[in-house]
Image (tube, rainbow, N blue to C red; front, side, top):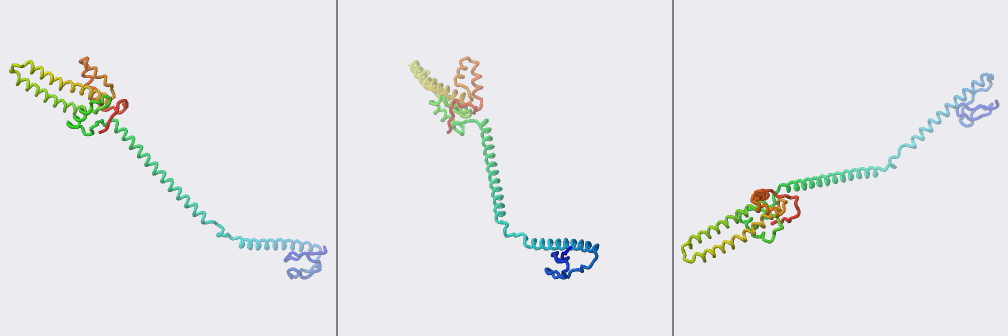
Length: 256
């Protein structure tokens, strides 16, 4: 073999070179036996591998120092924006949940109101009494297709009953006073006419308000004909005592 390698840097050298021109390392003597020459070459190969490994390690260290993380290239602003988006989304979700809760509350209130209407009585006067219900009766002449609440009906019935009783008492009192007069027949006719003037309008008004009361219970006004059977009057009275039927929409209910 006419060449050799520097055991320090691995440069290929002439066989008789004593110093490496690349690294300046003194080269080992070459006047050795042939069997030692192979040993030196093996030693050289090991040294060469060691040198290469050492050089590679040094390069890796330099490369690692050059490639340290550059935190300036990370976009921390985008992370902040992402966090803001998460917070905004959470706020929107909470607003939607509150809106849903409000809607559920309103629905429950509406259901409660509807349920409350199932038993709440209807009274057009809002505050039934002798005077209020009597005034409502006096306005019922042109409202046969309407409705009248149970309290308004019975308070008005009581008020008109008291008034009619007083009128009948006045008629009887007047009759007793004029009973001994010579013109009794003429006075009797006059009293009878007064009685008709009082009774007929009251009877018509009573029929109208009974029909309105039947409408409020969800029954037709024609049920008043049960009076003609005699015993059917009890059935009509039963219907008049029923509460308001809110399911019926055939007859109009007025307020106030």
